[in-house]
Image (cartoon, rainbow, N blue to C red; front, side, top):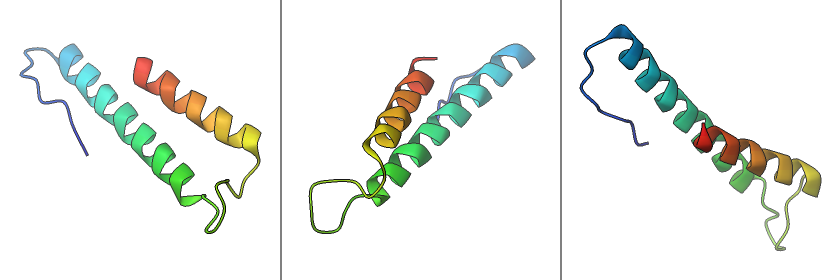
Length: 65
């Protein structure tokens, strides 16, 4: 897992870095969970397609914040 390591001089900057690290970790977990839901034999997921799309959109949104 990658984390931001930036020297900071204020509580506000420290909080922003912690929030960014938490978002990156959430996205990593979300994407890892999606990969775990692959069908073992076919090129498909074992959850509804719409759920995959919503999960991917959520991950992209978290990365853009």
